[in-house]
Structure formats: C-alpha cells, structure tokens
Image (cartoon, rainbow, N blue to C red; front, side):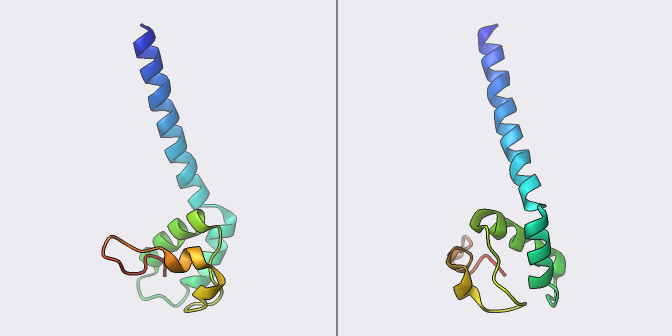
Length: 88
C-alpha cells in the first residue's frame, strides 16, 4: 500500500511539473515577445512554438523580427540535435 502511494505521489509530481512548464510557455511575457519576434515568419506557428520554448528557458527574447541575438546569449546559444540554432 505504501509503495502504491509513493508511486502515485511521484507520478503526480512529474505530471504537475510538466504542466507547469507548459503553462509558463503561455505566459504573457513570452507570448507578447514571441508575437513580435515571429510577426514576419513564414511558418508562424513553428516560430511561436520554438520561440516560446526558448523564452521559457532563457527568460528573454531578442528584440525585432530577426537578428539581435547578442541581446540574449542563452537564446543565441541554444542548438537543436543537429547543431543548428534552435531559437528563431
């Protein structure tokens, strides 16, 4: 019985932390910054997705629609599995 309770608590903790990260991605700060950043993107939904991921991790988004990544080194330095820039 104790094992079941402990397992339930651990699973609940993992799920709640995952939901917390998803809710942070939808925060007003990230939404507004990524809307500006992705306003001229060809594939806007993909841009918003990756910008949101980067914003949550780095807590910043470079100004403008392109470039200016020197303003946010964390955003600039994030790479995907192929070694290319992850953040738009």
